[in-house]
Length: 82
View 1 (tube, rainbow, N blue to C red):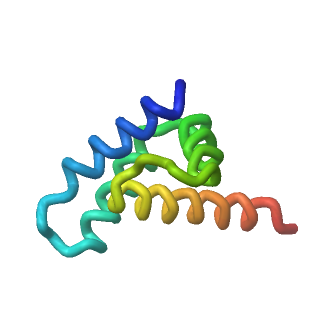
View 2: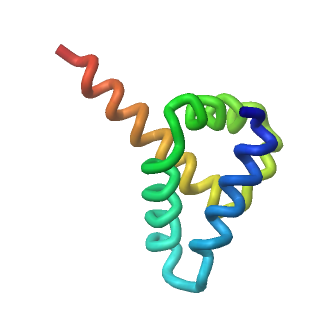
């Protein structure tokens, strides 16, 4: 899947959660949705894309993806510790 499509999907998901609630609830909704429905491959592709600079994500989508990627990274570190 190409990153342009992933960016569009993330922005669309974020737009659905951007309804004027508090920002933390909106971010949590996007994190939950993407976390449940995106494959690890999709998340890895977005993590690589987000390191490239101009990523094209809305503020809400970017914040949610950064949190989700960080959560996955911490979880992976925890599972690999003896």
